[in-house]
Image (tube, rainbow, N blue to C red; front, side):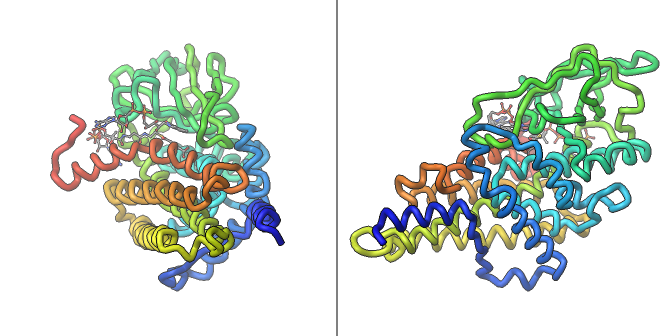
Amino acid sequence: MTMEDSLQVHKKLARQDLFESEDFYGLDELLTEEHKMIRAAIRDFVKREISPYIEDWCQNSVFPEEIVGKFGEMGVFGPQIPAEYGGGGMDYISYGLIMQEIERGDSGMRSTASVQSSLVMYPIYKFGTEGQRKKYLPKLASGKWLGCFGLTEPDYGSNPSGMLTHFKDMGDHYLLNGSKMWISNAPEADIAVVWAKDENRRIHGLIIERGMEGFSTPETKNKWSLRASSTGELVFDNVKVPKDNLLLNKSGLGAPMMCLDSARYGISWGAVGAAMDCFFQAKKYSQERIQFEKPIGSFQLIQKKLAEMLTEITKAQLLCWRLGNLMNEGKATTAQISLAKRNNVEMALNIAREARQIHGGNGITGEFSIMRHMMNLESVITYEGTHDIHLLILGKEITGISAFS
Ligand code: TGC
Ligand code: FAD
């Protein structure tokens, strides 16, 4: 077989998704049989339903709407929500493993899942009335409906407390005006959990349904990142919102921030998935690619890259496992979650960059998932709080002094 033939075979195999995970520190011993079964089921699903198509979806910037129903059938939506509302009633380690496996396939697919679970189902479950829970959660869990979360505005990203979107009490309804931008799932969403200020400038969550007059969701085009996830704006032009759609049980910035704690936790695991995929491919490529009549994996500089990748992935896995247990005990703090999100996303981005180098020219093509992960992770390091915002959250925790105000 010539080198060209061998590369062609390798490319076909990459599309087939032969991924196998490393477990360098025997972390599987820390998981229950149920955790391992959930992970295996989602890994199998990703290999079957995402990996064969994801390059085409991304190259053509297509959000595969049919994935929403499939995620619902797989129990990907609301794994942490009680079963009586259609959720999975699982623990936070299971939730993390699901995010890890989906993001191993693609960060954009994980975005769809984490927005639905942590940013739409979670606030409705946590801050909604029983009527709202029963009306929305089963449809969201099954994937019949897709939701989105509107916090960021054109002029208020890292500092959402300045938001301008507002509503007025009109007696029998609220009147909502304003706009949100950079909203994952917006163009296809059936409902949006939107954060807006009342007449006393207090922040509340409202459930906005597609079809309400004055509500539109223009798509954000020309992204180089998360191309299989759809992103858009939410525009509210005198939208009449029924009073039943207010999330009654918590107000203030703390409400959306609690949702972000849950989503950022999931991203900590998801980023490890993307890193694991890059490492798997880099290791395989380094064993197969011949230069100077030897596999490139025989060169010390390539071994250094691989050794450092495995070290960082192992440390991040341990961090996730411990954080998952703190989440299960209800003890995880915002700063602990920031540390894990910040560390793990940067780790994954660095690994994607190193893996791309190991692939040489091939690394820039869609034949391998590396460049796609790398571009996706540029969004992941920005959304749910930028890398530097998480550093400042940690800075405040350490010093007791806020750098924001
Ligand atoms: P600060 O003074 O720190 O806090 C204001 C009020 O909020 C409370 N709070 C929390 N409560 C519960 N849990 C948390 N994690 C909380 N964080 C803050 C806090 O106690 C206070 O309450 P009160 O009653 O005393 O008023 O706020 P600040 O104005 O200094 O702002 C700092 C902050 C926290 C907003 C900033 O650090 C930050 O996190 N900015 C980042 C914004 C962000 O992450 N946006 C994400 C948008 S959603 C998204 O990106 C989805 S992408 C999804 C995908 O596709 O996967
Ligand atoms: P800015 O806040 O303008 O920040 C610009 C730069 O300034 C950053 O480097 C930041 O770290 C830095 N900076 C800001 N303040 C400080 C400071 N005090 N000290 C030091 N540096 C600072 N939002 C939603 O509400 N829902 C969604 O579903 C959603 N999905 C998204 C999907 C994608 C693909 C992307 C890219 C974003 C999404 N976002 C979403 C928005 C995301 O949360 C914001 O982009 C993010 O919070 C940063 O806000 P910004 O883009 O306005 O940047």
